[in-house]
Image 1: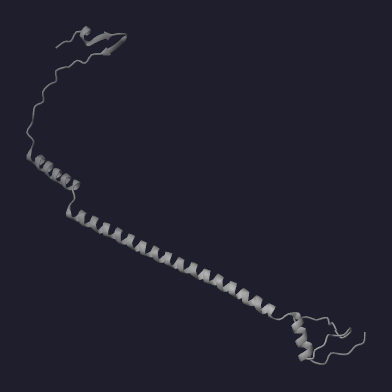
Image 2: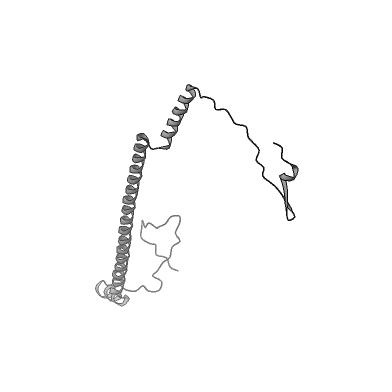
Length: 160
């Protein structure tokens, strides 16, 4: 079937477009499919069908994994609750420590203010018989190596 050149194209405005022309297509002959290929096709189709769906093994594995995830979440939440409880306990102990330090400072201040220097002087001079040192009674020694001085004999009397 021959198509004329003028029928293939037509002009619309200034744009030239192709006109769709249908050509006759040859018919294909249907051939019978051998049996082996048919069995292979049904086996492959069954295999594809099974791979798309949920089988028992897949369902069991999926159920086990979901249970493992739920157990992991429960364990994590319980551990997190334990950590929060311990943090609360630590905070309460810190508050208690601060209160004890404040009480200790108050007791220390009350002990320091219990006796004044005048009271100590009265007890030392009146009850214990102590007296202030006179000029020249205090002797200074150069210490040699070491942190302290051991006195093995009486302090020598020197006149300066």
